[in-house]
Each structure stands twice: as structure tokens, then as C-alpha cells.
Length: 144
Image (cartoon, rainbow, N blue to C red; front, top):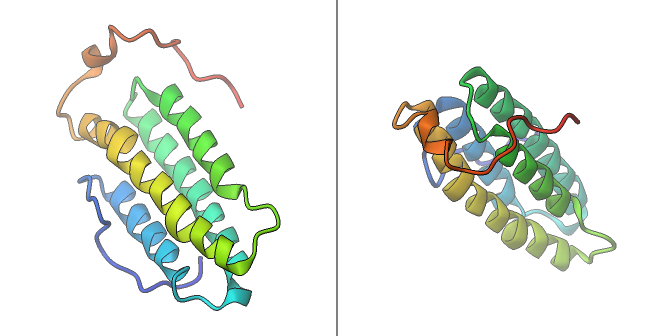
């Protein structure tokens, strides 16, 4: 991804190095939309979507390594978030700027504050798989 005014900590640190570093990088790129030239917005959008996809792949591998029982739900949300972030159609520069700086930013923040918060707490050992036993979840994520 193009260099951003990078920060070392994300807006909502989770205490899991991989997640925090990726989130800080993604948030910095999203913030660039406010100041990017109109002509640079499509490329910036593409870089953000690409970084989200790469981040999700790393995060899913981390969840597998920790046997996170909610992986399939988290995985499904990753796919949905990516699909929504990619949707731009024929947007004007101002609409694309809003799509990145407001819509994508809100999607990412909501994901971090919900699914990632739970995942990070599990990875940090704050609770175990027993917390997931009462949920009506399929045993595995569908193959993609």
C-alpha cells in the first residue's frame, strides 16, 4: 500500500500485535481519502480494498492458529465487509471520497469494535472455547 501518515497504534488497540499493526495501517490509508487528489482516489480505494483482503487473510490464519471457535462467523463478516467496501460503481470523486472516508471507515470500525474485540480477547486468553458452546454455529466454515 502507498505510504500513509502512519501511526503505530490504531484508534482501538486490541492488544494483538498483528491486528493492531494492520488496523493502524488501514486506518491511516482511509484517512488519506480526506486529502488525496481526486485523480488519486480510485487507486487509493483499490489499495485499501487490497490491504483489507490481505489483512483478513492474515487475521484468519491467526484465528486458525488459535483454534478460534467463531472463525466461520468472522470469516463470513470479512467476505461481506470486502464486498461492501468494493462497491463503488460510477462514483464522482466526492462520492468516492465519502465512500472511503465515511462508509468504509465505519465498516472497519464497527468490525473492529465487535468481532475483532471478541477474537482478540480469545487470543489473549481472556476466555475459552466454552463461551461458544451454547451458540448454534456450524462446526466448520464453508470452504471457499
